[in-house]
Length: 115
Image (cartoon, rainbow, N blue to C red; front, side):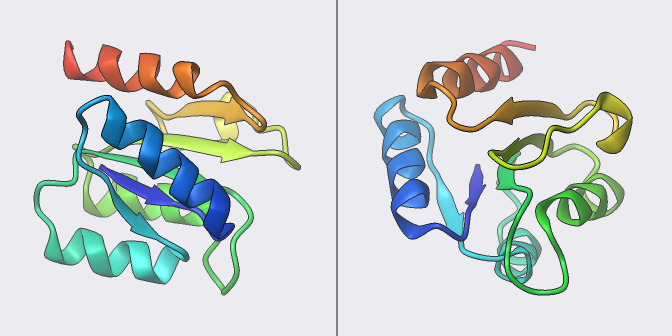
C-alpha cells in the first residue's frame, strides 16, 4: 500500500498506524513521487492520498490517473479543506475527512482485504 501525503508528520503517523496493523506501507510526499513508486512496485494494492499536494498533480488528479493506469488499486482520498462528493472521485474510491480516526482507515483497508 502507498501513503501519499505532503505533511511529513502526518505521513509518518499514517505509515506507523498502517505498519502496526500488519500492512506494508510505502510513502510518497507528492503525486509525482507516488506515480514513480506505482511504476516500480507492482505489489501496491491500495493508495491513501491527500487532496492538497504540491506540484501540478493534486491528490484528486492522482486518484483519476491511478484508476486509469492501475484500475485494480483501491483508493482512499483524504482532505481537511475540501469536502468531496462521490461524483468528484473515480468510481470505487473512499473518502475520509481530516482529521479522521485511524481506526476508520484501518476498517476500510481490512474490508478491502476480505473482499
